[in-house]
Length: 162
Image (cartoon, rainbow, N blue to C red):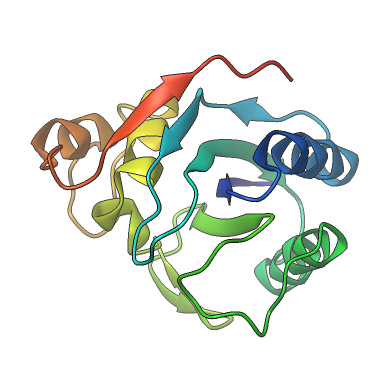
């Protein structure tokens, strides 16, 4: 069994799509450990605000199968894979951490670079795993969040009822 840490985000019918994605993840993995939900401005393009959170599950599957399963969930919720990388989307589910994997596996760089780049990933991750160590920096997620330049991206917790 391996701890799988996921980032979820949506800015198209976000409330509904986040709830739907969480339900589908529960169908696959059972229990989910969830961060608070944060609203943030879009990054890399001009668009509606996103809702973001981090989910942690215990996975008994190989990474390649997990990646395909997550893509299938995104597709089921209307994800358009032909859209530009930085664009509005009904759901985005990214693998942030898979156990102690460090480096490229199945075409995925782990831990995912967005952890260090995006407040909407790092803040909820630091909330759930404050004392866990980032494999490449050797710092805890709480230390990384403390040292992050908070002026780079605005985000705020919202009252999200599942």
